[in-house]
Amino acid sequence: MFEHFDNLRVRFAPSPTGYLHIGGARTALFNWLLARRHGGKFILRIEDTDELRSTEEAVGGILEGLHWLGLNWDEGPDVGGPHEPYFQSRRREIYHKYARTLIESGNAYFDTLTPPPAPGQKPAPQVGIDRRAYDAESRNAPPDSQLELFEKGAEFPLRIKCPQGTVSFQDAVRGEVAVNLDDVGDIVILKRNGGPVYNFTVVVDDADMAINLVLRGEDHISNTPKQLVIYNLLDLTPPKFAHVPLILGSDKKRLSKRHGATDILEYKTQGYLRDVMINFLALIGWNPGDDREVMSRDELVSAFSIGGLGASSGVYNQSKLDNFQGVHVRIMGVEDLSRLMQDFLPKEYTADREKYLEVVELLHDRIVKFSEAEHLMHYFFGEPRYNEKMVKKFLTDNPNREELFPIILENVEEADPFTAGQLEARFRLVSKLKKVGLGKLLQPVRVAVTGDRMSPGMFETLEVLGKDISLKRLRRYMAL
Image (cartoon, rainbow, N blue to C red; front, top):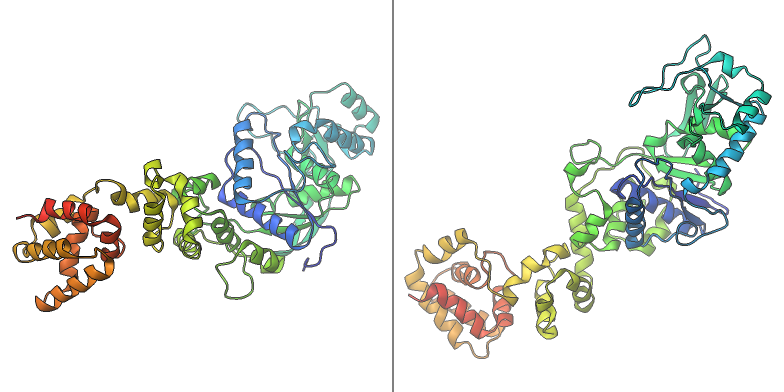
């Protein structure tokens, strides 16, 4: 269903009332992938009609998040296009033109009797025999009188005349959806101050911008019948629809901050690769039809289809994200990795380029988030941050210290050349002659030179640190 598209035009239309969250980023990605897959257009529209909550800061955050993900748009802010402006706050005249059309055709009326709701309250319930109408007298007023009110800038809500019966549509994910229009009612399209309402602006903008497929979150599925009524009253051809399930947290509840970072830019700050986020987001609720998981951007474009979208909610899995990051990092070259990571490190770490590359190569298999890289390599560029519990266990309270520590120091001192191979040969020989496990020899060394019990290969670590620094740290705890 919906797999062949001619002149495909899709859009991502966020409201700048907050950051670009994971769910919004995935919706943008799905639309972008479809456009690129079918040679169509990806349009970005900012739905900023909520004057109280929309902010320039949020707009900037959304644009920055999309730029970081590499989801370039063909029309929209900073790019322009034939359907400008791409901010709803600047399209008021367009909405009023369409509202006038509805009034002239007798399909919209000013509700002059329903009192405005008290601050913070919802509108009063519908009254009268016809559940669709809030005020029968206003609904039956002739179009000429309504047009006169419109021209005067009447401060009443403007409602559409919702017909009776049912409205249905074919959803690419859910199949056929049918709704009783008595449950829709005569919805407001212009507020008392003349400001347009969401379901009206979406129809006008999607029609004006020639959007022919709307792919969005399932939280909007209840809006679709209202929008279809408006399309019909305006005699406009509606787009096709695909409503994707929301992303859930590990507890199967709607994703929120308690499940981890939800602002897409937090992942940038933490040092995730943009292509890792693209790979990860694409597979939440979509399947390529085979066993592939780690996929490049080009592979995702080639494979993406609406048919791969699932009807059940995808689950946010932090471990999977970290695994994807690790895989992508491991297939990168050391030069590329060191370049991408350097912005997350103190400048003194990267001052000696040769040493920095040695450290990056040594830690290549351990690096996940770049924001953690400084912690992983701090002991190569300064004094270790000692874990006192590990110091006590493996060094100061080590029951074998009098027997093993002199041997450890002797073999580190006499290693020549001071290489990982030479050190490994010496320690393995000691392990064999003294009949002591290699781990018992190396764990105190590891804690003494790195500050904790976890590190890359011990022999390689000693070689990169060099003999002088290694001996200085070992003697601090092993000199009896």
